[in-house]
Length: 405
Image 1 (cartoon, rainbow, N blue to C red):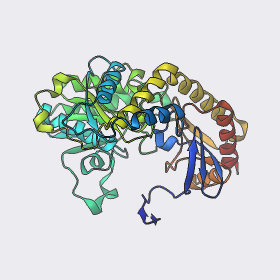
Image 2: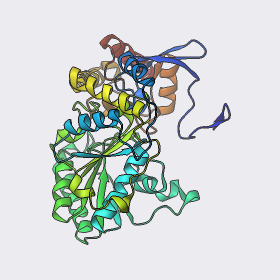
Image 3: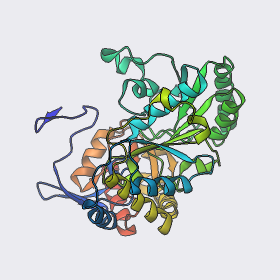
Image 4: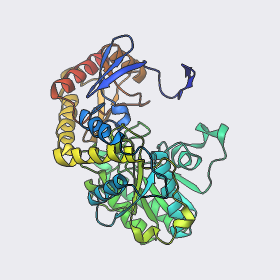
């Protein structure tokens, strides 16, 4: 749609003109107030307009707002050290980017340069960005036929999914999936497998893979000389109950991509974390160039964001509140005939509704003062991780009323 002379994604229903936002609340230009259960799709994990981050930005605004890509800025250096120190030791180097699309695109280029191979394995109905390369990872062909051809050599697989009905066959689902992946990797033509950490967050379906998914992929990629790229754009920075989702299965991928919550929405920023040995001989080939990647202000916002996550152990809040939300949904008598397939980790939660139109439920919730992102074929809940318990309960009560009606 086009509104205010701006083109908006037709896949995202228009909600309102935003006037202000603070912590877990948003206000529109008509004076309505909304509890936010979206965090800008996992961007404002520490709450909208976090005062501590804003204050830190104001302090550094007069120092330097930009640094050309061939220089080293003190704030860039400080953040690179902080980010890599928070990750497994093998991920000791970062490539600079402006967001998730650019970070994922750079990871793909690194994979081809480092392996000499061309093909990628990814999954249908996933989202990893808007470039021709990243769209090809998850968008099925019929969705993008008008802008085809996309970048070639992509192999899209069905994502292995566990539901209420299939949990009893979880091990079998994983085994069958890994057998199919191994058949593809045996050709020694695949540069990398790119995936989220056992759940689909970006597309909105919130499909969850069997336990052992990441470990199984990691073992196979190492066996066949294929790289494992983990997209933590949506799951990074405490969202899933760990600082990084890779910690759930103690897997160290070859590359991890970050954006969204990395700077809490204050300034655009993205990153690819990788081992220096993997990239040092291929820099001229994959060309890590980004005019606006890692401006000093963006790095300042990211540095303060990471400091808060580590200092306050925000991931523990996410786990505790996420468990509360899932228990609320599962044990609520009014919802027992409406809600099924409750799934997720931390405060990244999805569920299905029996015989209901998801858009209508979201619209009713919005009309009652709750802002929920339109995930398409499920309800996806992503409140700020710092949301007050009273606001969390109030939001769940509004959602309950919207579903039951």
